[in-house]
Length: 233
Image (tube, rainbow, N blue to C red; front, side, top):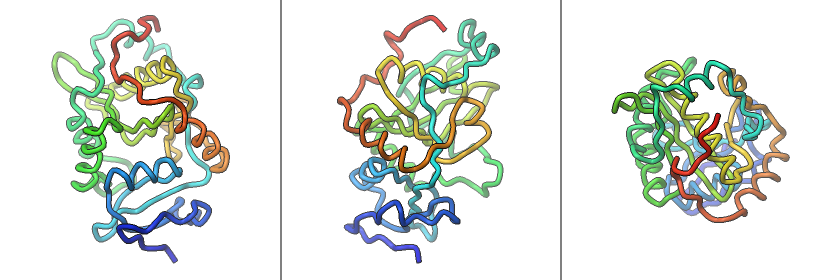
């Protein structure tokens, strides 16, 4: 039985998540900033809806990437050094989330980024919790990613590309930023071969939650800007 959350109902313990349903924990509850931030701090995230109600997940194992384990390929290093792509942070968050919503995904019919989800993350961006890393080419947004930062923990949500390697370009700059500012882990949520190729791996949920608690309690909010980052790749 999957519990249905009313507006004020707390999340059930993550141990109650259904492994046979990819870690589905609960249904319902409003996508308000406090609810979302509480979920992320507990190792829970929204993914998709049923009859307009958000679905909340906490899978075990959990896909994560530790910044020092990022795999920078020779071909991507060449693109980072020689252009023609450029990076910006938080200059077009709406454009990034729209790009992610419009990108077809293997095995998915449509997008989980509904209009309610879009509005919720735009609000988190306005409040300084959600951020975008964007890839630009000749003034055009060609790729990027978005997610949340709490303490020294980053939660990746989605990425897109309209040009070869555009999302990887943004991801590489995210890694450089996170290492520069002492972030300890990226939540990648669930396994994909693409994430594994970048250096992500699965860890037990218990280990994820222990590290999560430490990182979300660490420090304040970092200044989200590419300015001042090390130039050498």
